[in-house]
Length: 231
Length: 133
Image (cartoon, rainbow over the protein chains, first blue to last red):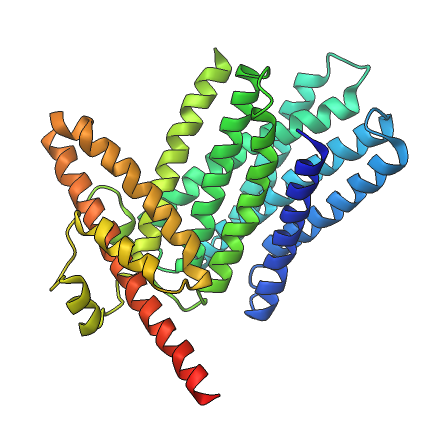
């Protein structure tokens, strides 16, 4: 991927992430969707930290390697928390938030332990390998959790348009990201596959910003119309 | 082998989420009452048919765009295209799929009619604002 294309995608992604935060403040929903906003603020901060490390130490440096993998793991963790916060919104009225938090923490610890067990064999690059493995496994857990959340949205006949579209956008993002990772393994010789990941990174802030801007918290939809097979 | 399996599974979930996303876009317009003028212009009395989509889309391109409905229309256009592909392949063999794709394409056409109504209202607002100056 050429430098100018990479820079353009980076600027676009950062602008969209900031747009979501600004939009949620303008729509008075910053606190309601606090963890989504925290995720995007962390994304912007991580991008700046990576750029700083890159310009100071170079692409091949150990410092950049650490900065890249650790910010990646941190962002995946933040996205996981954002996803759990969407669970809290969907299950909010059922009053089992305490159990939800407990399950989320246990799942996170389980994923971390599993990632550690996988990388424990290679002691030479244990810390960066662990960050990479944790990030990859959390993405997979995130995809499964989003799928379950979508099932719950349909089962509970959720009517809040914003929430429904947030969950669907997240599902699209996770699925597309998993597909792009697999494609990267299958066709690493083609340079075009390297651009898919960064472009997908722009999709989530774009779709969430549109949803935040277009729909108010009071906008409702007919849940029966979400089911692909007519009931 | 594992990567190919992950690719297939993720493409299936991607398609499932995409269909649901488009349906949520269409559902968010379902309670909109279309004006008589738009009904007259499009010739659609009650509910749009699957074949109306192309015609309504042409009318949509004649109106000034509302910034917040561009991406929604693009997603539904893509969905309509995929349904058209299904209609010309699988639906020829399976009547149930044919019935389903027809219903979905009609939903896409209804979505386009609502957007047309909103764009006409938007154009009127702009004209009214210009008249004030």
